[in-house]
Image (tube, rainbow, N blue to C red):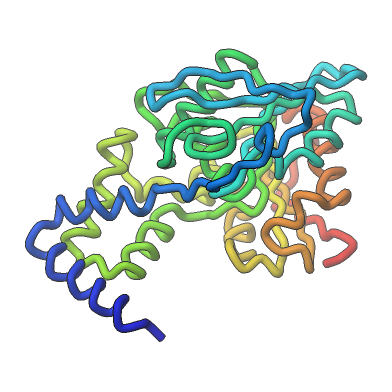
Amino acid sequence: MMHAGQQIAKGVIGRAGTRWPKTTADMAFRVFTRIPRPRRPKPNHGMPDHLRPITLQTASGPVATWSLPSAALAGRKALLVHGWNSQSRHMLSLARALNDAGIDVVLLDLPGHGASSGRHLHLGKGIEAIDAAWRHHGPFDAFVGHSFGGAVALNAALGTSMCVPARRPDKLVLIAAPNSLPAIFRGFGRTVGLPAPAQTALERKVLTLLGQSLDLMVASEQLKSYGRPVLVLHDMDDRDVLYADALRMARAGSHVELFTTSGLGHRRLLKSAEIHAAIRDHIAGPPLAAQEPAPYPRILIGEGA
């Protein structure tokens, strides 16, 4: 049930959005993309004391990366991208598991997160950050993205931003990633009470920023043309991004493999040894040309599911 203040705010937005749709959409976009920064960040942003961020320049400002080379080289390198309102330290246990398998890891703090600058994040800024990481640390054999970081990684690989070249690794890993960016925009619009003219103007901002329509950014459709091995990992008890999103992505083709867990939710699966092993095996596995084609999506069930 909405509080009185929320009801009043929605009423004001509704009237303003009908009369001044573009101005209202601009204000809504600023709210939608704003990241709450911690007042007292952890020392070294929660990363081990011996690590120091490598700062890279993007059009949106400096972003931080963290390099974790493996002592036992396997000749593979992965870029790990965290989710919304998160940071690289939350993917450290996965990074170490990949290091133990001989895979070099680079972690990226998205704009507005961790040691990176800024207070706002949208898909375009995220793609620019991955491009900067690729140019400095790459090329990468795999992208591993959690939650919104998965959407950023997929769209960076596909070259969704017209101003940034596609950075397509051999393997792609999507952990608890959303399937439909249009659905996220429309859910936000309903939450704040945007009327139809302002909602249309809000979605048009994506076309202005990236040069492509928001309606094209549905992973289950985008993955159909990806043509390289993709691992989708999702927990059935995820309340932030529903498991149904993973099922839709798994239907994109035989190159997509779905790994299912239960009882871990949206964030705890990042620390699961079972998840780590599945990602390690996917990255270290043979390239697409050496794999047996399957006539249907491969769905693997974890022990807890």
